[in-house]
View 1 (cartoon, helix red, strand yellow):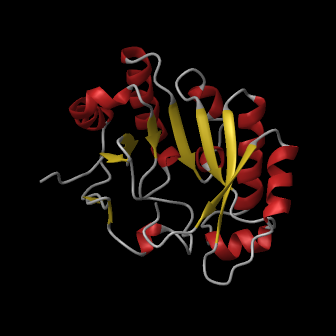
View 2 (cartoon, helix red, strand yellow):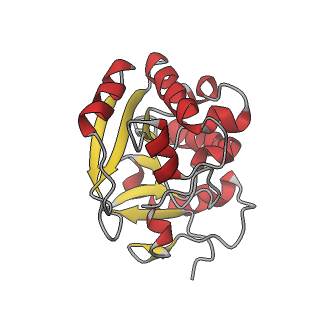
Length: 207
């Protein structure tokens, strides 16, 4: 039995679970509802994860790597920026045509207090960023951020990512309890910064 599921499959595609740490505590997050994704327990026994740990598990799924790899688990992947960079670089060097996406809350630059986007050019292709709401008040209520000015930090990250040439998508989750998201306004926010937009329906199992 794998103690730390750093790599898991969803719809036959590879996802990487780098950390359980996060700067948000979203009310609708799947981690508050269940421990696993398609049977793979997402809770790590340790946060002392190395790139080699991830790569070792990646090699068990070599036949699927070329279909694309997404950094997305039960935490915010950019918190482990150095591991993320090393793993992404390995994938790009070994499987150069593989598309790499990072699903993120957009706090990476605020967390590290530097522009991490420059460090990810050439090794990350896409960002899917959680917009979550059309206003800071709704964002704070739904996302319960642990850092100051989280909403503006997220939007700035998305704007800079789009302007830097990364394929960038802002997403919201609709249908969770009685929270009303202004989807049209959220799409306008995405369009205004040059990003794509995705409205994800909330599902009990998260996927």
